[in-house]
Image 1 (cartoon, rainbow, N blue to C red):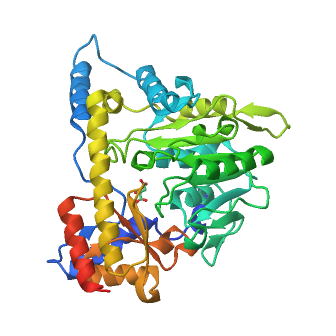
Image 2: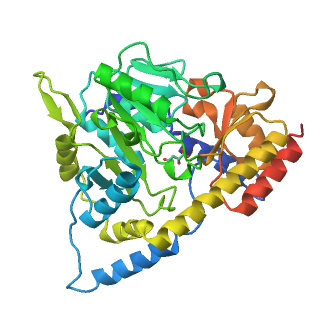
Image 3: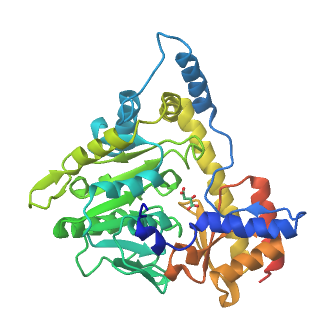
Length: 410
Ligand code: MLT
C-alpha cells in the first residue's frame, strides 16, 4: 500500500476558515431564516474595477484572434506586467527592484507555502503568535515541526504579540533562520514603522536569516510615514523575500493574481557549505511546477497600474477602510477593546467578559447572526481575541454593527 505524508496527521483537523464555514452551516441548518452576515474570512465583496474588467474583456478578444492568441506564457509572468510592478510598486518608492526579480503567481497564500520548496529541512523558523495560519500549517506539512502540544508545534519559535507590545514581536534573542512577518498584519491590523523593520533587517543580516515579508495588505496603509515594502529598508534586499497580492486591493480573490519578489543577491547555504542564489532556485521551482497566470488575468492585473485603475483601486480600498472605521467606532462605543482597522482591513478585539474566542464566536453567531474569526484560530496567544473583517457591503457592515451594539451595550 502507498504511504502518506504523515506530517499531515499533525495538523489540526480543519483549516480555520472551512471550520468556521462548517459551524455556520450547522447553525443555518437549524435556523434557516437567520440572516447571516459574514465578517469572518477576509474575502472581498465589491465588484472588480472597471479598468480591470475592460482589460480582461479585451484580452479575451485577443485570445479569439490567431494573430494575438497566447498559448503558454512565461512561467515568471509577462514582461509588461513585471515591468509595471517593478517601476510603480517598488522603484517609485525608492526600492531598487528589477522586473526580473518579480515572479507573478496565482496567490500570496500559495507562494508563502510554496517557497518552502527551496529551503532545507533543518531551518529554525519563527512565527508570531497569533499568525496567518498558512505559515504554520505549510511548515507542518513540510515536516519542519514536531507534534502540536497545547496549541503550539514543537520546533517552531513563537514570538508572542499582544496589546502589551503593540502587536509587534520582540526581536528574538536566539538565532533563527527563517522569519515570517506580515504588515499590515493579518490578523491584528497592526502596522510596522521603518525603524521597527530596520531592526528586523539588522537582525536578519547579523544572523544570516531570511525574512518572508507578507505585504498583501499594503494598499490599506493610510499613514505616509509607514513603509509599504520591506525593500524600503536599507539592506532588505540581502535578507528578504516579499509576497504581494492583487486580491485585497483590486478584488482579485476569485480572479487570482499575485507576485513574489526574490532579489537576485539573496543567498542561502547548500549542504556543502556553498552559497546559492535563491532567485535561481525559485525560478527553477516555478518553471517546473507552475505554468503561469492566464494571459487574461495578467492583463487585468496590468490595468491596476493604469491611471483609471489606480483611481478605481483607491476608491475600493477607501470603501473598505471606511467600513473598518465604522466597525472600530461602533465597537468602541459599545465598550469593546478594539485594535487595528486604521491602516488595515482587519479589526482585532478583546472578547467581552473573558469569553474564549470560540465561545464568543458561537455567542455572536447565535445572538446576532454575525460571523467573525476566533482569535485562537490564529494561534494560542490569540485566545480571548476575535477578528472582524471590513470586507463587506456598507449595508451589511452597518447592519452587523447595529446588531452587535444592541446585543453588547456598554
Ligand atoms: C483571511 O481571512 O485571513 C484571508 O482570507 C487570508 C487569505 O487571503 O488567505
